[in-house]
Image (cartoon, rainbow, N blue to C red; front, side, top):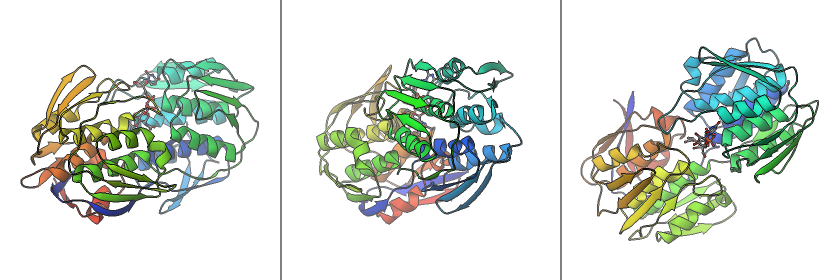
Length: 418
Ligand code: EPZ
């Protein structure tokens, strides 16, 4: 198991290019189950989660060919419809295979994703919606068993705007009989990206990006030619790195229009943010101001940047209130930040952060993907010897070559076997 070591205190400067988005690539790869032929995908990041979904799909009989960030996918000869517990337990997003398998093959057996560090994360809304579309579902020995002759369009209102739920139903509905109307749908940019890919395959979808999506089922789809959007959470992580180190970073190949909520908060904290169509330049202030945030579904402040922004507030001047409203248990990074000298009080889904002059280096442990990024950011400014961040397999799930990219920006960072 690897660990990352960081000598804090360097001001980060330079430019960095962000990778394709994990949370766009996962549904895009799953959607390749929806039609035969060879799908050509671009800007696919090299991440552990991408390798996991490929492993599961290879077990189904899908064939992958890939060079760098390009990936060809062929699902002509499926031999199985089962996503096994061993893989699903490592990545909840495997649930994204359910909609496409049901839509194309009328059957699927997917291990029910268990809870995860940041919350219970049930998939009841996915199952309820697919049942409304005519799927027969039963749970057996920890597996979702689903079947349907042909899914049919339905009027579905989500109790909560679920991201992968919206993606699963969009994929299930594109070849369903009739029209599906999805209300209180999620509006994340990754959903627009998936809708663009599906339209490129011949699907008839309107309203993606709003809370009401209408999908008219079609009979045939053709193979995709799609390049996934860049990763707005990776972009946000580098923007916060510039602010926390008082540095100046140009982040290239990103989509700043998807980060308005973060840009607004960084400017309130005193950072200077320059935005163009495909890059954002962030200049950190000499003294950070404390700012309150509340996570919300898109276009609100992303929960996937909450931990990183909390680290920023740990070294800001004054008190800041951080409210987490999307997941019920997403403050696990707090105890590790406190080991580095942070002053944080938790009360339910609120964390009161008292900014401190300096964080101190310490051995810390990553507990989930975004928590690991928050600890790396803390280590970039920590005083004293190197900080050791353990269990970084969490980080490798969702960040491509992060330490190389930080090294290129001037950080003293390296990876070692733990
Ligand atoms: C997606 O997860 C992302 N993952 C998450 O990113 C992200 O944190 C989350 O959306 C919110 O933005 C992927 O896209 C692969 P939800 P998802 O369904 O779809 C409740 C990262 O770090 N809910 O929108 O699983 C749920 O418990 C990851 O990259 C139900 O109750 O999240 C949560 O409280 C972490 N029943 C809320 O809705 C359901 O059936 C939002 O969850 C579905 C969801």
